[in-house]
Length: 139
Length: 156
Image (cartoon, rainbow over all chains, first blue to last red; front, side):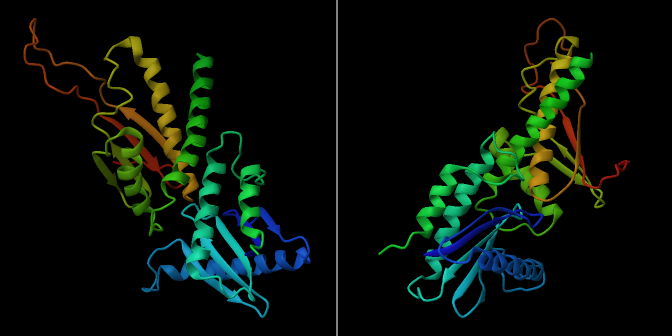
């Protein structure tokens, strides 16, 4: 499943970033950071390109030899970035979309929590457990 | 009097926070917005319908950042009649609603200033002693004015 999940605020700082602890975390942080440029490019190109259907899901941002990075932007300009292992070829587009849907639903729940101040790091346990369920390898 | 002022500010801030959460939930499944006008139309139709069960009756703009939203029968004030008794309380309901709109817009990326004005509170027309045929709806036209630039402009 996902190797790293990040939620980036509209001011481009991370609200939540978590990766599989076995790997070098800095590498993933760096990948997420570079993917933000690609996300911005895709959003700004939306106005001019006729192909895009004003969807929230952005699709594959860029592939590297080991990993693939997917992106999703909400209407409130919060970005979700997911890094997935390339060797897991069974993962299809629809599954990625449904994972982003779940992320968005959990993020909305966090937003509606009156004790949460928008712009703070996300510390909700429910959100954590949802991300954990996405990251655990299903054997 | 000072209490009243602080109360209004607090209510507006509460409305702001609620608006942010509501917008997140309502825009979860909608397509991406094209521009500012698209966002204002969303506020007038979907947002207002979900919160107040009706749409905004009239949206006017000067295309330079000022939008006037007119609701001819604002649900939060329909139970209040004209007269001094409810005047100061009516402003509290308006403050919360202004905060609601400001919060929603801020979450969608628009910095705005929202003000509200009520042209007349609900009242029956003067039909003499027997109001046998009153008008079926009390006339009430609060107007919400949003200006989306930081400097306020006057709409003539």
